Image (spheres, one colour):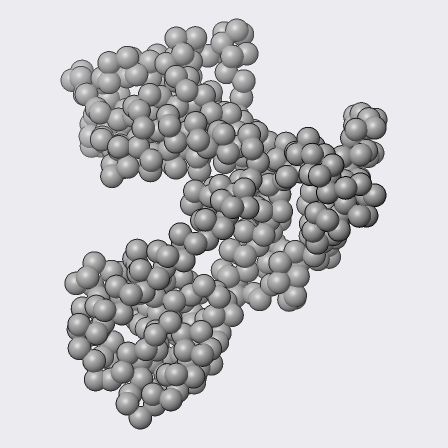
Length: 446
């Protein structure tokens, strides 16, 4: 479905007419009246559809089309042309334009084009999803995996999302807990309601209590008016408690009461508020250990942990690194207007060897840096930070000596990374493809 449209047309009357009609169809519209301004707007907005006039004062329309498609090969661009330049419109379609509008056009023509573009984008999305599924890849928005354990986790999350049970997302920082929480909300019957995040580490106890439960005027110095808390703002939706392990005993007690009764009192208030909001929480700490040590309430832990969804660290998802890296690099390359042809095998090998203490968040940071610094072509080792280039997994502090199985797994992984097919890899290893297929599955390299 289309949401945003960019109009690049120096005729302000036509641009305004198009804008009014498109907004009447429920679309958000951005306009630009010159080629360079249109390219800048495209880079910033990434619209679902571009309506591009082929005759502009500063740049040739075909040049603009080429630059848009170079930045985003999947962009949907329809050209706007006068009768005398139909041949140019045909040339534009040969270069990758989706369709064209011929002046003078009516509102029915615009509506038809929008409906067709919407159908085509839906079909393209469906085809990409099917291709990924055939390749063993699961994708939900920005959440991507081909790892069997994470695919199973994703299925469990989707099933659990259909209920109103509290969900607890656990795992190291940067593994995607917040992203999976948002996905779970989008799958639930509360998806039309708000998704409100509370960062439990960002505020002092008093301020966090006010942020969660709200306060009444005069409750403390600076409380000059009543304020709604995040729980009330999440009415009919979901409140996500990020790093819930960092809450104080007093806040834990108020959270427990809310989970039991859906009731609470604002800071400084006496009137009980009742809110219909689902609670999801996340932590990178071991809550069970904290319960045993008295650092977290056991009854609250059980209330939060109706369904636990533990995201594995990236070092345990080696088969996901190429997938996440290619996807992330393509996104950053498009954002920065870079024409990058994927990742060189040597660079990908470095990505797979590194232990990623910061997990997916660290990987995305490295890829964004690479997209900014790369000079074109494929991402190479020179585009990666020195920490990755110089890392030696064999001499890392405390690293155990590898077993024979570890060495075999590493050798198989290297051969698979440097060959173009399973059959070629099997020939290189001197085994038959069926044996290599079984080894690949056993080593988690599928």
